[in-house]
Amino acid sequence: MNTTNILKVALIQSDLVWENPSENRKRFEEKISGLSDKIDLVVLPEMFTTGFTMNASIVAETMEGETVQWLQYLAQKKSTAIVGSIVIRENDCFYNRLLFVHPSGNIDSYNKKHTFTLAGEHEVFSAGTERTIVDYKGWKICPLICYDLRFPVWARNTENYDLLLYVASWPKPRIEAWDSLLKARAIENMSYTIGVNRVGVDVNGYEYTGNTVCYDTLGNCFAKNNQGTEEVLIVELNKEAQTKIRDRFCFLDDRDAFVIKK
Figure 1 (tube, one colour):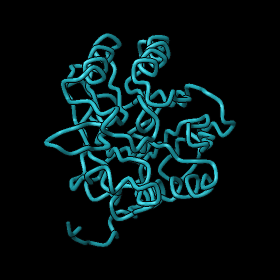
Figure 2: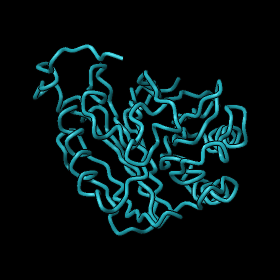
Figure 3: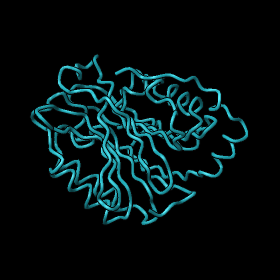
């Protein structure tokens, strides 16, 4: 695979049509098709085809379904990787599954570990048990989902990943926590950290203001939209610059050793 020192990433902050995969795919295809051909990675929100629904039996797809095929088609057409989560049915279980679709059409996946008990997600969806580290263009990427953000042990940078990213449906009343925790994850893991959140109001009346953001290794913010509007933010991540900061400060060398019990 080709490697790159500069990773150009498109963060798509968008409203979602409730439980309407075909309309959401149409809207995202318009946004993705309008991107430059030099984008390396496109990041979509959590449950980007449906909104954060607990009606899994109504909207669930399979790994051979329309959305997966659509993602593979777009990734190949635009020569870019695309990442976001959708509802997947597999082995009589439902998963809030993040899909990292490579330009080749190959897929890495991650099942959300921390199901959101406040919304009853744990009663509908099976929790994942394994983290996924994606190797892409010489970058090691750790993709996680929304509520995972509240659990720093799960995100701990024990693999020396280069980019930590979260896709989310994080509502307005707790948006300060979103901002604070994303910045903390960037600092403590000495890693570029991206959070892509939706906007709009869902059928349950929950409002989302986005606050899609990118932080660097030291917690400096260099791209953010907290206006509650749809926008595609483009960020360029520099792996060499990050490595120099890590080599200078060496904070990760002093991290605690631990084993995560399943």
